[in-house]
Image (cartoon, rainbow, N blue to C red; front, side):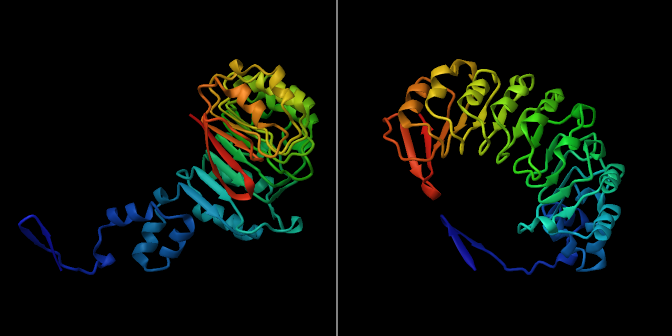
Amino acid sequence: MTGTEGNQVTNFSHEIVNFSNLPDELLMDIFSRFSFDDLCRCARVCRRWHALCKCIDMKRQIIIHQVLPQPKFLQLIEHHFSIYLEDFRILPSTRPSCANFMPITGKQLLEINSHCSLKILILKYCCLDVVTLVHFPLSLDHLSIRGCNMDSAKFFGLDPSLFLPHLVSLDIGYVKNYLTSDELFRLNSLKTLKALYMEGCLRINSGGIESIHKLLPRLEILDVEGTDISNEGAIFIMNNCPKMKKLFLGHTQIDDRVFDAADKKLMPDLDYFCVIDSKITAIGLQNFFKDFDSLSVLTVKAFPKVSSNFEFRIAAFDVYLYRWK
């Protein structure tokens, strides 16, 4: 095959790449971009690839997409967890029934802790009924138990900061057995927490929001979509979160009266404000945010009449995304 560039003619020869001729360093660079599942498949190709894929440097992140029986889970920990592992995630590809949630025990978590110093732990659709924060790695800075079963009265203990002293992000959205406002006050002790996700926690109300008054000034991201907060709770958030950058208040009953009592100057760094499927109107939004320089994205449910300051595009399910110019 030939190609021309100006007056020059360049010949390109087709060569079949033989992976067996590639040096270990190049193969390891390629493998480092693979998921854990892909590494396991590559390890079955030949002995050389098996040895390279078992290199502990390759296993900084492990993601599993299926429910594992306890013996296999312990084997996974024993054979694949190392001091290099920083990120472990259980993300089932399909949502199992509650009866088939993957059970996680304190012994398993302590075994993980003995093998590595995780930074990120994401458990989805797992049963955590018999564990508390005392079992989790002290090294975590991101913990997600979204959609898991848990005993919320026991899970956090009186002082979560004793067990998660470095935690930056906590996702407890849609937890089962229902997290209530009565347990939220314990989160005040998490002095490094910057992001809190409580989407779908139906029993979280305005009283629960007020109970974390010590935590709110430290938060940069807060998601209370689908909770039971009222206008009072939303106002309390907006007036007590000076570092807030992303605020999710959608799927609640809040309305324009929030803007009458909230002071937008108290959230100078806000750049994302979501009120999807609430009773907030376009007029209320425009009046409140017309001089809000930092806001970049605004999401609402209905199609309001908007001024020329907005540009919008239609997304799925009649959700409209507005960008403040």
